Image (cartoon, rainbow, N blue to C red; front, side, top):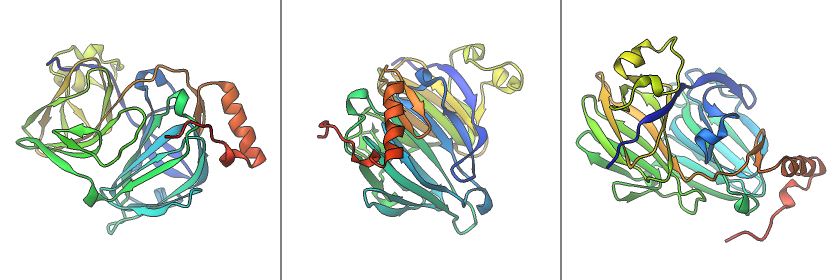
Length: 307
């Protein structure tokens, strides 16, 4: 089994989205070929309600799937299909925008005033961009977990890991979405589909994700990364892009568990035309979507591509 090496490394950067939500963006709006079939990953953990309470009021989506996974607090969801609910800690919503949906996501603090989670955008293939919208929501108690080895634990949201299948189904890019925890001092070898793109985002602790390649090949600037260059140690807010292989080998360091999102999906290899919350394949398709928004016909569009 060949371990995947790191081929790209970055840190999430502070930004603001929605009605003024402070968050950190791991990737999005550029270099889409590096992360294909994924488009964006946001880390919206916040300590103060004033940093996030304004939320994400009503806005449209087309051509993508949005995945929201919560750690603390909650998000109240509503959409143009009539879905409404609250995603609490450990819960997930997987929304397939398809031909068009309008929704809102309004964060609420937990008992300590904190709120936090992640949102991932997954692209839809050209042949499926105009399918009917679909919404899946699962609370923590419906999301299974698995012990992969001694001290290695994973929450299985979508895809299969350790012979455990996540509850999210009927997703276009055959993705895996897992929240992995490795106890300090432990090592994990996690199998990955050989033809899939694999990325990881660290949200707690520290560890080593590549035991073989020279850190100078990881695509990072020299300044500010002396610790990585010498010790290969990656910690909170690091985004890791892996090369080809059948597995990743990860070692947890320090005194607390290493925690990271592990995400994979089958690349589409298609052109991307991106306009804010709408992602199509051509500029013409993008312009047409915005014309329909202006005309009030955005939600009326659907081709005969449904299951």
